[in-house]
Image (cartoon, rainbow, N blue to C red; front, top):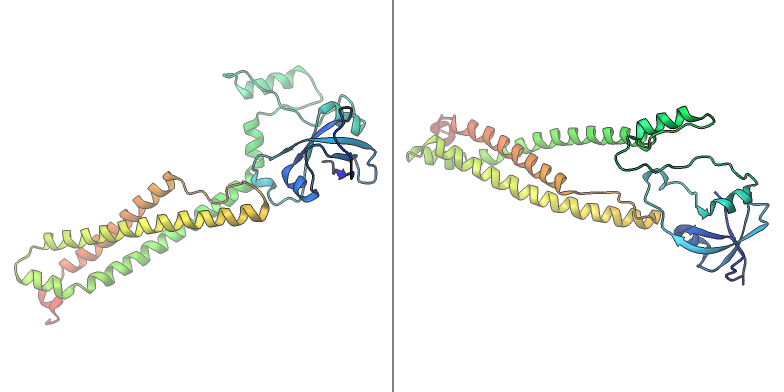
Length: 268
């Protein structure tokens, strides 16, 4: 896009073209509404003057957060005159009446004339999002590996915790407590541990997400959300935690109640 340069002391003029400057660019150059700039198609040809009519915040875009580009917006006639290319555009958007099929509309436009190519916005978005799909799949693979490793770790913890209850289980078996009751008690304890752990984990995720957003939004000067913890994610995490906790607790409790009381007491 065009790179504006400030002209000291120039003020608002009704005869000059009006432009809108991106907030980050305005902050870097110290621009305010009403300042007059020199603009041009190339840096060494800044012949035209324009007035800053607005400072805008662009829509957050993951594809552009790392790019050093800064933008200004001009009215189409002013941009065509500046570039010396009237009646010529690179691309434009067409708004459809609600209920119209975008694919059929694109086909009709492509059959109507030549010299351009129409695409539905969904197709353009899908094509430009291939990189993010790869990253998403990579993160999903990391998530699966993490869950599996966490499940193994949780099972080991539950086995160790249940092993510490060997003497208690032996005493309960000696006094006539049924295996089913011992199994249910250990399973309830595992459920409580998993529930408390899932709540602490969800709180840690929310805090880490807030810290991540605060740091990177300040670093890149954007409102893009880098870490998003939704109720769906929290619900899925809690359900998965409870399921893994119950499974690990049930396996450890089943292993304990099937052992003879004398073995648990250490006499066999």
